[in-house]
Length: 182
Image 1 (spheres, one colour):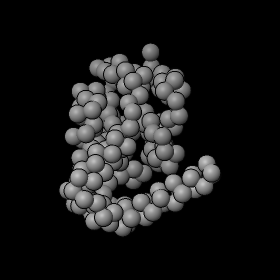
Image 2: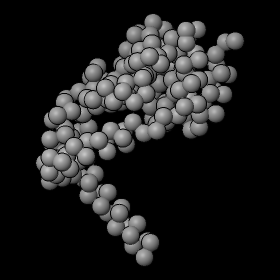
Image 3: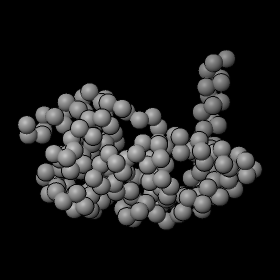
């Protein structure tokens, strides 16, 4: 019974993913080609949502996107300032800045935030790493980049940044600490 329900849930998820892909088949939301209102309406249309369901879906989507904050990693990032310039580079969609500022206060945590949808570039495009370093006022060889997506870490390394694949807060903090001068 459990396996049948799990398979059924997976099939349902695949159906939702397929429907959502219709709204942005080329994944262009994250480079700013659609406003939050446009993709919200598109999702509602392909999923056949009522206005109430549309609002609930968007709230659930932002909860999923923002996830749960890693307090240990956030506290560590905060402790690096002002000795080091810090930033966030995020593949995102319209509305992300608002949601993350409201939930986590990211603008007060770091010196710069580069949202892909605002700059028209997304990881792993080498230009977005260069732009982020430029905004931080650091050379790419001086930048430590942390991400949980291997291809983004590989791209950062190829651009001369010191890329770290995030798996746990403890491991990431230790790897950053080993790279920073004392």
